[in-house]
Structure formats: C-alpha cells, structure tokens
Length: 286
Image (cartoon, rainbow, N blue to C red; front, side):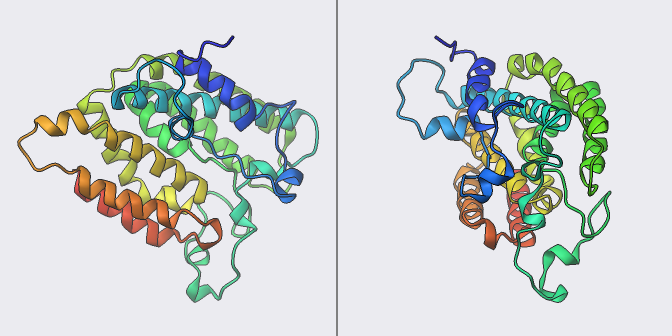
C-alpha cells in the first residue's frame, strides 16, 4: 500500500509513470510512435479520476496538492535528465521542446516564433523543456526565496547546456542532479506552507504577470500556468464570498476557459494571442 494522503508520496507514485525515471521512461522514439507527451499536473489529473478516497478535497487543500505535486514533478524530471545524461541515447530529444522542431513553416512576417529572438541561446537551437518550472519559481520565491535563487542559477545553466547540438553529458548530469537536490530540500517547505488569501493572491498576480515569458517558452509551460491559475481561482471561493468588493471569479473563469480552448491543439498554439489572455487575467485579479 502507498500513503496517498501525503501529497509528496502521492505525487511520487504518479510521477513514476507520468514522468518516469532514468531506468523507465518515455523517449523520443516512443513519442514519435504516438505516445502522448508527458505533461502532468497532480490536481488536474486527480480531478479526472472518480473519487474513491477520503481526504482534504477543499479548494485550499487542492492548492497544497498542486504546489507539492509541481515540486515533486520538477525533482523527478531533473533526476530523469541526470540519469539519461549518464547513460543511454544522447541527446534525448524527449527532454527538449517538441515545437522547436515541429511547428508550421511560415514566412517571418507571419510567424511569432521568428519575430522573437531566443533568450540565452543561438537562433535555430532547440530548448530544454522547462514546462512547469517558471510557475514553480514563483512559488519558491514566496516560500524559500534564497533557495529559489540558487535553483534558478542551476536551471539557467542547464538551459544553456541543453540548447547545444551535443550537450556535455557530464556537465548536464552534474547540474541536473544538483538542481534535483535543491528542489528536494524545498519540498518540505512547499508542503507545509500556509496557502492563505495573501499567498494565493500573490501567486495569481505573479503567475499571470509572467504571461509573456511563459507563453513564449512553449505550449507545455503555458498549459502548466493555466492549470495553476485554475486551481488558485477555485481557492478564492471562501475569501471572495466574504469580501465587500465584486466577485472576480466569473470573469477569471471565463478567461481561463478561453485559455484552455487555445491550448487544446499544440499545432495551433499561438503565444502572443495567449499572452493577451494572461494580461487580461492579471489586470482582472489585481
């Protein structure tokens, strides 16, 4: 039996398949054969299961599960990358942003991808799939700021190393392993944090305010941000009902519905259009 009441342990069990390990994982060959890409968020995926357990199913409880699940996911992704760098096929394209290669070919004037130069890497290079990290960085800054900045340094280094044509195995393995240890040390702080009105509001403002950078990092990062905002908006319920000002939730939920509509198809992904929705959300939640 597995202790699924502990959010970290539940996430670890889910990630063993939905993220994988160095020994058992979905690689580029499997994805090319039709296996879905591995994007996972604990609360969204749990919500799709028929409830068959007792526990904290309140909106505030879900925020804690979301936060812990994101931290565990990042740790497991980094551990998987370190293991892949030490042995096996290299570079493993499943660790990179799929849409850096797989995207519609348009003239520069009609392509948002060519209209914005990549940051910190050469034009035409592929990028490491950071996925949920930009959202998680916002949370880390609030619950463990010093550790968050040390982790950001490692993640920036990892992003530069992974954008090279033939990434240095030893360098990637060492940096990813070090970053995984940093995240592991923060899991406890994330799990035990008090997700009150103030913290939830700061997360909503911070995540939606990062819209431009998040959306231009790719579909996966934007999807993780939308999932995060969805969980956090639902947690506004108790406080908003007591407040004197108008309830912001109907408008925020309408914007989220449009976000998810635009995120349905990866091939139609349009970062600038989605960025405008993040901007509207940010203006509405302040």
